[in-house]
Image 1 (cartoon, rainbow, N blue to C red):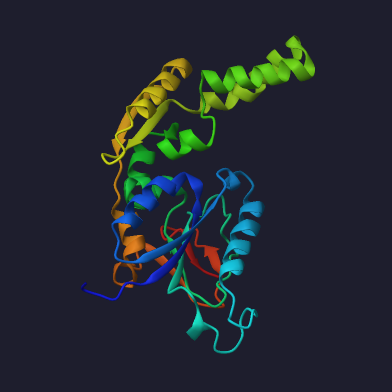
Image 2 (image 1 turned 120 degrees about the vertical axis):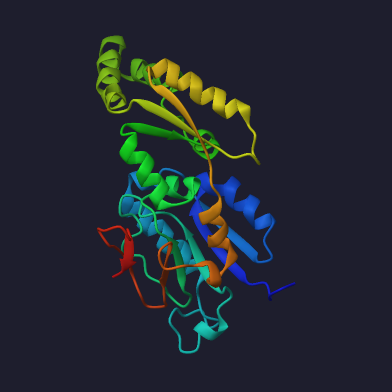
Length: 256
C-alpha cells in the first residue's frame, strides 16, 4: 500500500449512510460510524446537543477525562469527520475536544450529494423552489407526496374531526406552493429505479416539474481520503479546543 491506513470516526446524518459506507468499502483507511437520526436540522439546538454528545462520547482520554494533558497523542482516531453541513446553524458552537474535526464546507447535505458547494449554488440560483429527493431522504422520512398528505389527513381527522382536519391540511400544505420542482440525485452505483419513479410520482401529484441530476462523489471521496485531500476551500479543520462558527460568506463555516 502507498501509505499507512488511518482510522477515522465519521459522525453523520443517517441520510448519508449509503454513500459513506460505499466509499468506505473501497478506502484504504478504516472507519467507525455514528449515524444520527435524520431531521435534526429542523431543531438546530437538538442537533448541536446530539452531535456534541457523540463527539464527546468517542473522544475521551485514556484516563476518561476530556482535555487531559497528553490525551491528544493517545487519541483513538486521526480525526473525527463531521458529516453535516451548517444545517440551519446546527453545527455552530461545536467544540473539538482531543481530536481534530473535519467539516465539509456546505450549507446542507445536498452539497455532499452534488459534489461541491459551487455546483449546488449554481443549480439553486438557476432553479429556485427546488425540493430534493435522494434514496437516503426517501428511506428516512416521508417526502412531500400523496402518501404524506393522506397519512397526515387521517391522523388529523381522527384527532380533530373531518372539518378541522381539512383546514389543518390546507394550512400545512401552503408551504408546498413555495416549490416548483422535485429534483432526484442519482448515483450509478445505486441504480434504484424505484426511487426515481417515486420522485416522479411525487412531482406529478404536487404539480411540480421533475428533474434528475447525476450525483458527484468527489467531495465525499476527498472527505474520506485523508489530510492530503482536505483543501481549505472545501474543508474546515478544527483543532482541539477550537469551535465551529458560521462564516456568513462563501466559506460557509469557519473557526469561532
